[in-house]
Every structure is written in C-alpha cells, then in structure tokens.
Image (cartoon, rainbow, N blue to C red; front, top):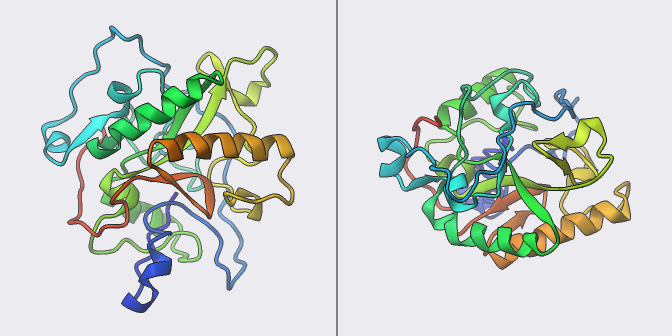
Length: 256
C-alpha cells in the first residue's frame, strides 16, 4: 500500500508497477518486516441505501475530480485501515471520518466490478483509496526503509492521484469468525490480511495460499478486470485504474 518507488528513467518501467501502490518486500534484501495486525477495523462504514444522500466532497477534492466511492458504489463497505491504528505503521494516519475518495475516471469501472460481484453474493470492501502526499511522507518517516516504504517523489501517481484502490470482498456468511466480521458481513478468505509482507500476498501466489483463497482472489481480479482495473502483481488487493502510472502534480486535498 505504501510503495512510491521513484526510480531512474531506465528503471521506470519496473517502478511504475510499484507506484504509490502498496508495500512489498525487496527482491534483493530480506529486512525485518514492519508489524501489522489482522484485526478488523471497528470503524467500517456500512453500505448505504440508494436513497441515502452522500455529503458532497470538499471543493478542493471536487476540483481535482474526486468523488466519494459510496456515491459510485452504494453497496461498498469502507474500512480505511489508515484511519485506524490497524495498519503496518501502527498509528492512525487519516483523520476520523476519512472518506474513500477516487478519481471520477474510476467510477464506471467500479460500478461494473461491483455489479459483477453481486451475482456471486459478494460486496466490495475498500481498504484504501486516495492517499494524500502528506500521509505518504508520514509513512516514510515512521518506516524509513525503502525496502518497504519508498520515499515520496515530486509527483503523484496511483493512490496519490486517486486512481488506485485497495479492495477485498465480503459476503453474508453464517458463523463468521469474529476477526473477519465487518459491518453486517464477513470478510472473504484471501489467504493473507491487508499489507501482509509475505510472498503469499502476491497476486498470483499459490504456495502457502489455500485453493479456496486462490479462487476468491481470481474472482476479485475477474470482476475488477471487467471494470478496466488491473491488479498489481505484488499485492492481491491493489488495483490500478487507467492513468494510474501517469506522473501528475502533487495532490494534497482533505480526505474528510
């Protein structure tokens, strides 16, 4: 979730896939991973009814083309891990009441993905959306290890431009384990938790990942792909929309 690899032009083709996207271990070193928790956030926002109004986003967010994901996918569950201490940094990085903001260019694709998932009884859960540049700076200050958190660069991409999202699935499941309960649903088993610094967290991992979890990941990928969003191979939960790899001026607008 935290990757912001700003590389030389020669390495840009590789670095673009890392982006502001997420966190993953280096292929050349094996540092001790930052701690993380598997606890489900208690601040998850439940799906809204079709008639429930979504407060308008701030003028600054609107100016850069951001929308609240709940206005796009009313069935979405929003569980911003960085709005709680339940993340690899261990501190709350977003203010209470933070919203899942995405660039309007993702709207149609997310609607398509959500509609495809409804046929199998699944609900999209959003773990991270737009991430302010200032938050990325804080992440690097707290974990100044470029193997896990790359230093913020002079432009915005991926999460910092609102064109990438971190998502998982939830469904209605009787007897849901306590640690997987979210809103009134149950998190689907994906083999690892969010921001898992393990080989099993890669999108197409098979070793150490239960077959059922592999199928669940494939179902998520298929739905997101139908909406034009592509998975980042290093993390099964991270998806990029069109233009996520384009370097843009730094965006730093309120997430509330």
